Length: 109
Image (cartoon, rainbow, N blue to C red; front, side):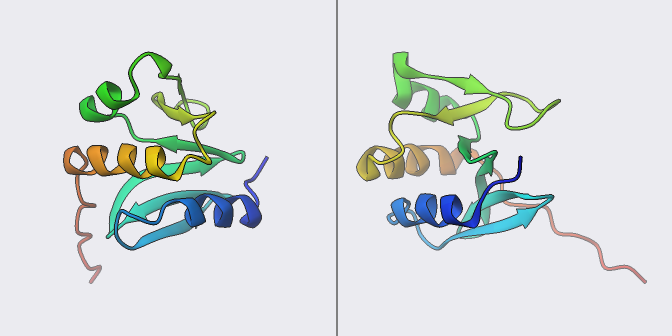
């Protein structure tokens, strides 16, 4: 099941304190970026945040992990805290420093 644009807009509306946040559609699902750095995805109308040590410490005992799609490594699944803007933005803020920027693609000749 592909994610809906309405759900993506809802999620992006709640992430408003981490820089310029964008979503890029890929195969019916979405990759989410903050200032050009991918930090999560939206798959099947669920928000997944890439796992980091800082994110794991921030979430603590409420941690839920699941793969965003079959064959993927588990990510943090945001379940009950989606509407808690302060919590969600803080999770992303603490996670971003551990995540890499995308690699530059070589130009085809």
